[in-house]
Image (tube, rainbow over all chains, first blue to last red; front, side, top):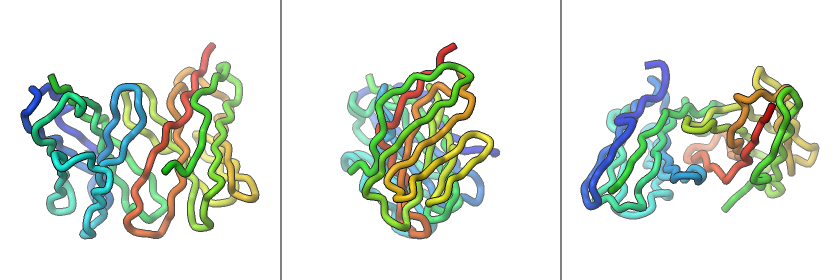
Length: 115
Length: 112
């Protein structure tokens, strides 16, 4: 596609359930980022992938959060045993390279509501 | 740790220039200044970036002080559609492993 695609656009889940959020980056983009944005708050960095390097997981808030990037393309963010405080918009972005002077393109996000 | 400081909010009249300041007093010589904005309910959008020279594109101008400790994003003729949160970010280029870290930004409200 032309841009970063995220699915689902909205997800309502019960507390304690696991959820998977998907991100399809722009083709050829080697860098991929996940962010969390709670209502009325700024963007909270979660994890970043760059090519074949080990991902920077320094922003993951707990061990309930994990992410994979298969084949250097599609990424999945998994939240296990969801809690109400996990309710937020989860944004994915990709860029050609993290170190290069290239802009990051963002998807429209997945709005997660934990009830 | 926040590398940038921005006012939490600003107002601007439609058609006037919007000047958004950003302080980055601890910026390193190899760090660039990036600006993004986030319109309500959308993902952030890249605006412009620069190292030390002033930059201009179709969206905005970026003025960086000579000591590089602060910068100003200028929207020359603000419209209602420019109402958004504007983020100033400093980031090392040409180094693998550098994530894009957002601060709290400035909420710009453009009114008619």
